[in-house]
Length: 181
Image 1: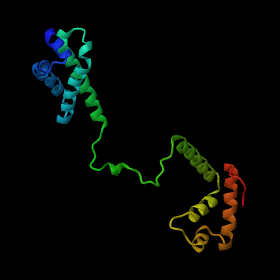
Image 2: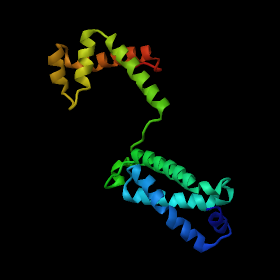
Image 3: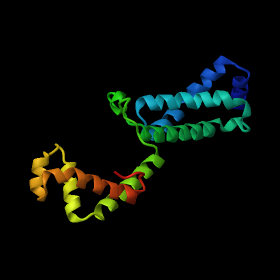
């Protein structure tokens, strides 16, 4: 065996053919034992032999090339198996792309927005029940008419705008949002 390895190290193509023929079944057995798909198994098989070509000059015990091949094949197969589990095959990768105008907020932006939302909810909870009801109707979707809102909350139609401004000014003050009115 040592003689065969020495010939491979010297670049003897026939020695390489002989070595591959001799240990190919062993490498395939290890690769198949890891349950890889055919294409992944073929990649691992080739990669195992590539590693031997790269490292044949550094083998300290040339007579143990079979054990070395088994170890490399198993490690490469396990690595490929882990990679395969992380990948998801999809018919059209474009399905996972966000439209160009859709910005995904950075974590810090999301945290700030969440904090602002919580502050806004607190400010709304601090309003009187009548003021909360008025804001809910004013910001309803689809928009409601002032006549409907006035009738719903029992207020004169002309009072809705000024009351809305006062409520929003109070909330801006609580939120620290600048000028009121």
